[in-house]
Amino acid sequence: MSVSPNRAPGASDPGLSFRPFVVLMACLMAMNALAIDIMLAALPAMAKSLHIPTENQRQWIIAVYVIGFGAAQLFWGPLADRFGRKPVLVASTALFGVLSLVAGLSATFPLLLVARFLQGIAAAASRVLVVSIVRDCYEGRQMARVMSLTFMCFLAVPILAPSIGQIILLGTGSWRWIFLLLGAFGGMVAIVAGMKLKETLHSEFRRPVSVAGITSAAGRVFGNRTAAGYTLCSAFSFGSMMGFINSVGQIFTDIFHAPQLFPLIFACIAGTMGLSSFVNSRIVGRFGTRRVSQTAMFGFTAMSLIHLAISLSGRETIWILGIIQAGTMFFFGMMGSNFGSMAMETVGDIAGTASSIQGFFQTLTGALIGLAIGQSFNGTTVPLAIGFSVIGFAVIICVTITERGKLFRPHHMPVAS
Image (spheres, rainbow, N blue to C red):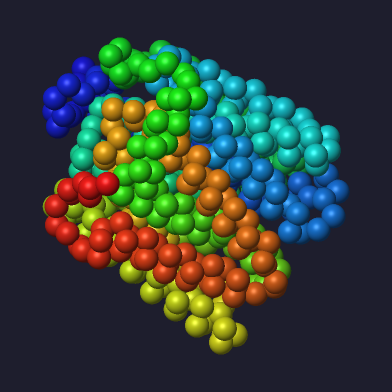
């Protein structure tokens, strides 16, 4: 069965109709989001249970997962290009489920960090495979549309995850049940993918795993102006997300003393990202990825500067924070899927390896930026607002250089190397 009548000639058939295909891709993306967001409300309980000495140190529960997630993408992509998407997908999601159980049974903070790092390594395959499988079946603006719909579905996870984590914590009295749920989710995705998904990698595109192949692909990714520029932009924007995630729990608890409002306001902020992805999926075909994403980057920067001004004034409230962050993340959502699609547009024939190289760079760079923002927490929102503002200007500069100063071009045309 065709995924969509709009698939490009020669595109792969994954064996699923359009909606189930998008749902499965969203579940793969959600696995990573769930592994981060579901435990945000439980971090204080984890810190108390495992005797974590300082509040900023508990950020490492998130950080080591993201570092493992970023680093492992270098080898998942080549494996997917050599052995196919399906076997790698099934094996990695099953491994994610097992490692989730190990994390839930950890008795010490160092053991939990090791389990979280390995869990991130397993989850890294999902990031590579979503982009690769969608690229196998779509290209251009249609790929951007599918990625937007996938992103929109997956964003239901950050909307609900903190509340789910809090409910589990209140209902069971233990944060360990959160990891048991993650293990069950990973196993379910592995079973569904194993039963329903067809292989999407054409046999003629299979490539042997080799250092030379990875080096060659890296040369193509970073040697092409469009691929390199938008890979860097994606890294900057991901850094803002990680800075927010690392800081948000302490902001609600230490600044506003309202941890009970955290799930609600976090859900509203995440909901605006879902809304922006839906809007993007409706307008990107008409206006193009460049016009939409470049408008969004200016909106993101403007909202960040407004937040900085309010934060420096000392008049910020929890509701002002929620409104400002919701607006900022609305524009973030419009940047994300479009930057990713443009970064892939010239490397479709090596989608798996290219996606892994881009993901490796984007995630590790973003994780380090986010950790720097989080570790700068000083009892105010000023470090977060400064971080977002700097990132906004960095994205504008990067896009301007990538496009040779020609912004808001209406058509989706690759820029020459």
